Structure formats: C-alpha cells, structure tokens
Length: 168
Image 1 (cartoon, rainbow, N blue to C red):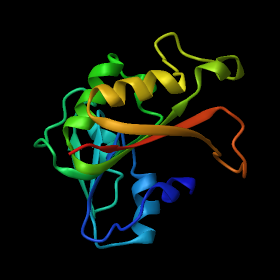
Image 2 (image 1 turned 120 degrees about the vertical axis):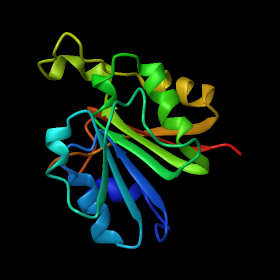
Image 3 (image 1 turned 180 degrees about the vertical axis):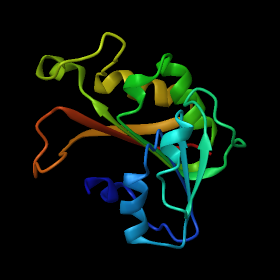
C-alpha cells in the first residue's frame, strides 16, 4: 500500500496504470477516492477482463498507448518497465501522455540487487541515475527513493520509486 503515498489531491483527476494487469493498484487507489477517472493499460486483453468495472481498460503496449498528448494527471507503472523492449521509448510515451504539472511514478527493481532474484534474460533492472536521466530528457524533473514492498515495513534496496513532475 506504499503506492498511496505518491498520490494526493486526487478528486477529479485522470489516473492511468501502465501495465495494470488485473488492476490491483487501481483498487488500492479507489479505496482512497472514487471521484477519479481510472484507466488501465495492459498488453494482455485477456487479463484486462479481471479489472474492476470502474476502470477504463485499453489493450496496448507501453511503447504506443492510444491516448492524446497531455491527457493524464497521474501516470504510473509498477514492475512494468523491466519488461519493456525499448526503455527510452517507454518513458518517452509515458511522459507524452502526462499533463504539464502532472506526476509520473515508476517503481521497478534496482540493478545493484540483481543477484537477489532469478532473472529472465530479457528482464532489465535499473540504476537510479538511468531513469532520472531519461525522465529529464522528456521534460520531467524527477527524484527517487527506495521503497518497501510486500510485507516489509522498511525498504531493503530491491525496489526503487522514481517520481517526477512534468514541466510546463
């Protein structure tokens, strides 16, 4: 539930979960407010069928999302970037659909912890600087912090959360 700490002033906002799966993080956000427009994008049309009915689902790729420029107040992804074929293009696309002054949140794994888990050959993990550099390239001022996950109450270095605000 640490995801909630990245969101504030949600009433009337448009929020998209990029790589939403069954919508588990959207459900957590909905508990905080119901007066948002919730969107979920996933590559799997089949898995989108499990999203709650209040989520507007779109089958699509993180590399090419069918939304207008500057459409969302919040764009976030959790453990999705690591599966993207072209990381820079994925970040560029997420920044494209983010409104000026909107917030982007990316949570993924720290490359310095690569030894901790069995990893598929195509998986990509990141250094904090890598993602900060790409976000800045696409007009987002960003920072990062290590975050806790699952039942852990304290971060252990495995997951990094990057958050940034798109410049006007």
